[in-house]
Image (tube, rainbow, N blue to C red; front, side):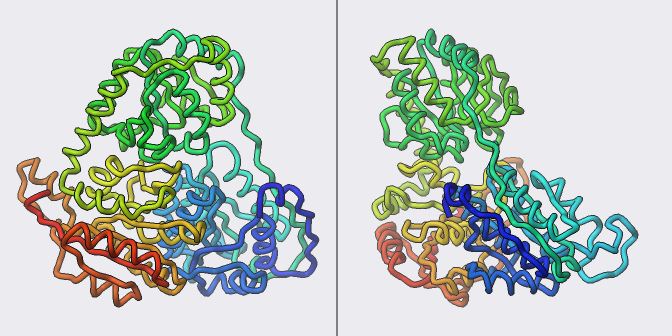
Length: 548
């Protein structure tokens, strides 16, 4: 269901129905046609209503996997992803995925039952099944809002409020907790669609101030974060007019194609990019907190003026203070900024000059050195990737040293990576969510063996749903990054080596086609073949620990 369809939706009057029916009718009214989750004793009525309303229900093997898959669906579709779980341990199992969605500004809705209305939320405990100490309060500390309706009408209102929160301003996750007795109780409700608060561009006076700063600067560097991926064309137009190189954060990957002449790629973490940021006459930061997970080599110390554009007014001085702050929607604001730059500076774009070529060469050489172990594999992988491939990745050396800074990415928002909160186990369930959201696009996961084992059982979900995802696993037999950190501290590595296991047999037991390859050409062949299989493909690449 499109936004225009939602706007035209007619309110529904429900009479004498269960709270579960109100909940599902409200979700459907907001365009929900697929949910991830696991049924339990306290939410059976919800799953029955999902079935009757024709909502596709994908059963995961763990609630954390449901949350990650909903996140992958949200990042890919640009619509809220929905996970439905039962109360107590199920909610807390999903909490990590919600914390990651919050960190990465992803609109995920977690729906769960709560304890009956007659029970206190902050008492000593009654021993009721799945009872937790203030489940809603705990989730409220993790997500943008945790809502607990107490009547049938309040359920409909809470769903509308949740979608308004997720679709307004900076997208972030929401938890909706419906008391389990209310889910079974019958009553009446009017279901209506909640509308987002429309984001505006920055004010004219702020844009003029930005034009003044950027227009007089000889060397401008553009930093594009996750907030820029839906403003790709407008961002590129501004960069071209300023003759400014563009470097992206991980979440900003593909904001402009990484093989564009102005692109430095996803290489903000390189010395080359950080030196340029510090030395530029002006820096334009679009939709990024400039967080430690993207800028981990050293603190930033820009000597030029900083112009910052963000939908979130609280970002003006996070990590780096702004000289000019533009608060507003990125696409609208960048379009206005581009118009004003052309008016002030003329229609002729600036020449980028040798500075950009030098920066690009330095940054490329730096990431090639850091990722040299994986370059032959990545070069082979690149030959079988579509321009709009969805890359589901994990916190692994093969990803942040290898794939992300060295692969060519041509489509905005196509790299799905857990920044900030930095969880493990992201790849398989996020690939599932991405494949559900975009069944016609190629989905390839890249993971280390340690992260894979966190959520490897979700391969069974992909097999059951016949999703042709491909997962490439670089196997260094443990936690290679942590092993290296221990060695760098002069310590003897401990608890970082994996126990004996066979990842190929494990994946096969879960319904995947799985192979082990020892040369890059075989990797490319298997990735290409994986697109035609009715289910997941896992490709294990053994690594030599001495080379890491």
